[in-house]
Every structure is written in structure tokens, then in C-alpha cells.
Length: 162
Image 1 (cartoon, rainbow, N blue to C red):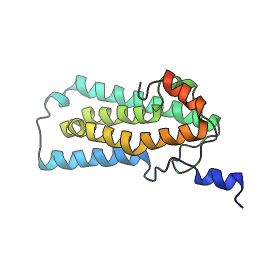
Image 2 (image 1 turned 90 degrees about the vertical axis):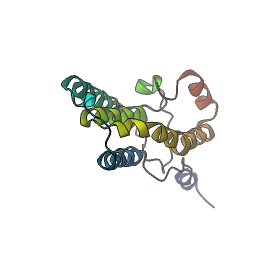
Image 3 (image 1 turned 120 degrees about the vertical axis):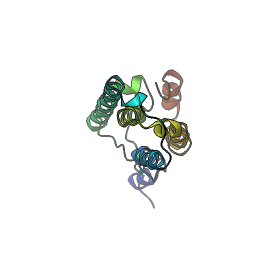
Image 4 (image 1 turned 30 degrees about the vertical axis):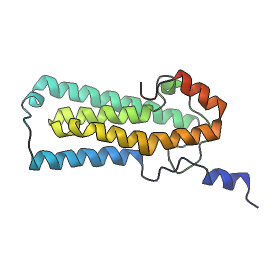
């Protein structure tokens, strides 16, 4: 007979590819596309736009660090093949159900602006779709199953992105 701890270990969102790898893969794919099919980047190569890229990247890093600190303090996991110990609803999670993914988008767009790659922007809807369909939907089903009414109330009051 399985213990509750063994059941908890098997009960997870089922996202086997770490979500940051999607952002990295799309970014590198955009670099390959830019090399093979260059688009005009003069607008993105200006000092002011590169400054905006830095700002977006730093915002993303800041939000990501706040999210990670919150997970560490709550002794929860960000590993998508492990069971959650608690539902995150405070701190940055009071504004977004997915602040870590929002932070990764900020870093993604910041890097796109800084390095002047239009392909990164062109690919971003596909990245968003994969994140929503493969990662977020699975996580939402899991959280609904794991936390029930508590998650439904949280979902009703907090937006998915921001």
C-alpha cells in the first residue's frame, strides 16, 4: 500500500521540460533566424532602446528573484515534477499567478531589445502559446486538483499574467 508521501511524489503538474528552457530555446532559435534571415535592427541598436532592454531585463531578474525567495521561504518547490506543499498567493503571487514566467518574458524581451533581434519578438506569440498550453494549463489543472476551492478562489481574484 502506498503512503501519502509516495502519492504526493507522484502527484505533480507533469511538466517534464523545465519552463526556462523554452525561453532559452526560443531565444537561441531567434538568433539563428537573425543570422540566416536578418531583419533591419537599426532601431534596436540605439542607446535609448538598449537602455530599455537593460531595464526590462533587470525588472525580469528582480521579479524572478522575489519569486524564488518566496518559494524558498515557504519551503515549496519550483520544480514542475514535484508536488507543491502550499499554494502561493502572497507577495508577487498576489498580482500574477505566474510571476516567474512573467519575469522570464521580461528578460526575454529585454535581451531581444538589447541585442537588436526582431525575430525574438516575432517568435514570442509561439512561446506564449507553448507556455500556456504545455506548462500553465497543466499546472492549473494540478493546482485545482491539489488545492480545490482555495485555488478556484485565488484564480478568480488574480490574473494569469499581470
